[in-house]
Image 1 (cartoon, rainbow, N blue to C red):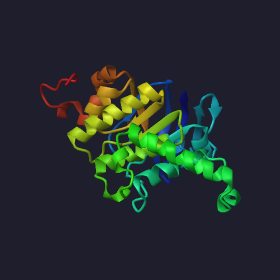
Image 2 (image 1 turned 180 degrees about the vertical axis):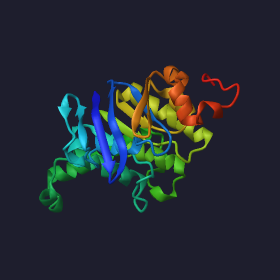
Image 3 (image 1 turned 180 degrees about the horizontal axis):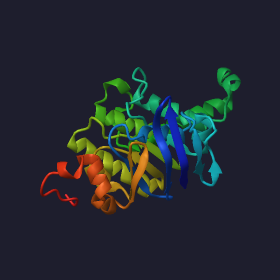
Image 4 (image 1 turned 45 degrees about the horizontal axis):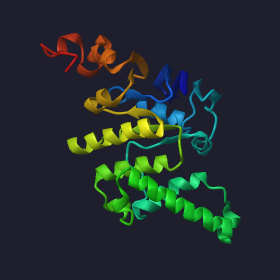
Length: 262
């Protein structure tokens, strides 16, 4: 579904990504992990069109998308969440979903301003679909509350719901478990798996919670200092010596008795 081909990106004299290549299979949950500053969010920003790479290609469903604007990439079927929750706090929960749903509308500024009949019908359909999404992510009972009043766990679920409103083929999740407790993280993992299994949406997950990553991912790509150091199944990556060193330091710094299976 998605191919990253030799992507490089620098900011001034700092190289954030160097010759990054990997594939994401249709229907998979692909985790992208690595220490802070490894380049994970930079790569998501390139895939979603926020940044342009210095070199390389991003190929989505056989089409090169690297020079498209974020709105065009979204319309092609890629949606995302952000490392820091980006909700409209002064809008209700359902209004936040409806904002995402408007990416699928056909009415323009003129017809919306004059509230033509087909526009009003489309608005009712947006409302109905948004309510369905809220029920699907277990937030239907919160629909009339302000988004800013939700606990952080529900805010992150709401942001995923807004991403689903665009009817994506691929969703990019940037650290969705950040700030969540164990129960909220477990609930998040179940929702991500449900989205993949029931809605058949492919997912790229950037995450630091290794328990979540190893529990729900089909494959894992590991970045360190802007380079790919491992790519494989969760078990293969867990046992990779370069990954262990990247997370725990030089070999002499690794705690005695460390077990890659734990």
